[in-house]
Length: 186
Ligand SMILES: [Zn+2]
Image (tube, rainbow, N blue to C red):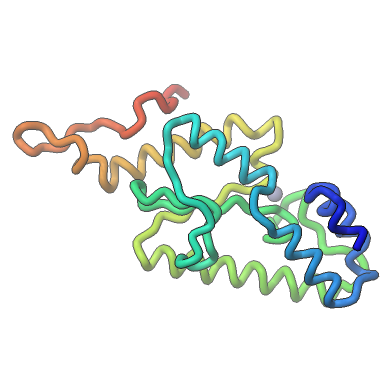
């Protein structure tokens, strides 16, 4: 099938135009391709985390929603969400297509409900849930987003395990973050 020869991003762009002409089976196959691992926005976050010294696991199947990135040491999961599929409210990249409106509206509602359900379950299990949107990783927004992410992770670390990993002789926690090289400047 012609579609599988396209790169994911090409596929993503052409998908919106083509989806309405597809059979349900074609549509499903196409969506599976788009949802495949290693899409670009996720890679931006992963590469950046790695360079900052964070170590993580990927696509942990045992967790609700199979989070893209799992930082066990920080009790944190990160979802890198495509704005279209995850129906990013108020975002330019999320528009209900003008044809088959009912199909798309229902699909986006289900996606959104599923996301929220997963986030709630993870939260109950004791995970911090961070969501990074595709549009927040555009060239203009990327550095601000990644800086905010590192601040959040540092804060989480202090709120949770940081104290245990850096005890003083008296057993008092020191106010020190896990990754001092991670930016604290504003
Ligand atoms: Zn967005």
